[in-house]
Length: 366
Length: 266
Image (cartoon, rainbow over all chains, first blue to last red; front, side, top):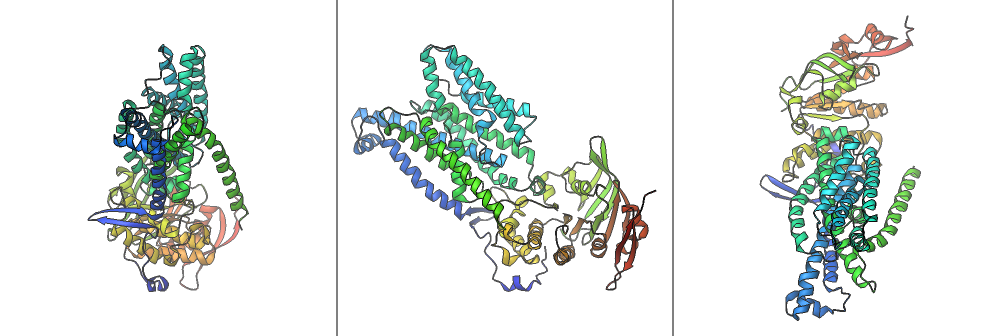
């Protein structure tokens, strides 16, 4: 546009650096924006992640010392320690990181889609679907071992598809989807309970441990395929997140800014279900991470962004820290899901009470 | 982009909802550099027409061409390079700043690998300057007055750099002074060669600020043309079932509508 440029105040001013809150990196025709506040959030979360990782390697219910653990990691300790650290703790740590990141990103996508901070993937039946599939698989086995982790994501996708089908399409990311989700979840949960009630204590115990969310005994057999899936799903989520910013406008504005809303909503929902389904399949339905991680990330990176990276980091920190905490906090090892539940309850209350207060404040503002 | 004439061509457009046709057989040509004002009573199909032009409501038949291309044959993104829309009372993202809002106007030109080109930067600067919102750039949108906010929204639409700009009642929530600001701005936008189509409730304002008046009733175009020739007692009567006197404005002779009474419909 050939600007009229006759506005006296604007033209007398030194041009403002735009956008004011980001750093720009350009290379030829390519350009990237790095919002400074999001970078700051990452700078805060990364040391926390390093700390949680260190804690997870060292934390021990068997009284292993710090030096011993480091020796085990480097392969200089005695063979037993090396095996414990390298073959048990390291894969468990990596799986924990991935479970947390996947739940964080999935929660970020669903919260942005619904425009509601309490919207998590389990509202569309992900947890119950995954649980039903895993329970059904364990029911057949004599040992009660929950081996087929990949049944989790399949169950999750099936349950979510059922929800979307009943709600009449993914285009309505509103209440209809959530209400149908609650109904389908209850139904699918009832099926799991029915199967469980007919099993022996051994199977029921194994399934129970999975169903509260546990990383105990997770290794690369689940970790490697999970990692490969994440390498596809996380970049796609980043691309979706860039466009999901536009959902904060009305649909009319977003559409006239070039966003294909139906396709975007459907894609974001599929990504969220796939990510959460994988996480639940591998680690069980670890509570509150998908809810809390995006809220923490949003708080750090400011309200105008869709914090995909921040949610991944926050989720990873939460799961790894909770898992490590569960190993040292009690005389008996606590599953990670129990720890996140214990910490998550007060967090949820805090979120609800705080949002109540801010809306009240906004209402009384002149 | 700005020299293309005509900017907008609508041919035999029919649009509506299942079982309820709303827009009938609309033909409309608006050249680049022109402002067209669509007027008519509530429910006459103005908004549906605007939505069809903005590629938001798929017409049942007919074509909408922008700079020679049928918008309904383009992708949503391609269409967003040609047509920008400012709805009536748009909702902004929470806590967004003015610069942050205007930045979104560049979204159709951006991607994961091209997040902020020099062209984006230039377009946003120009849009802020053209709307006089440069010094508000760092302010939060929700802390501004209605008039300022509307100028910021216009800046966002301008930053989109489209040959056609559609405005749905851009002055309906503004007082007289701010409404004049916005309408003057609309004229400036058209002066850059763009085509502007706005829905207007105020017939007098439409007659003064538009080059082309499009009067709609019951989904049909009742009259269209130069406002000075189009606006008369008969038109007001037919559009609104109201008696009115039409006076020439002392300042420039543009028609001024002075309503007398609601005509009792026989």
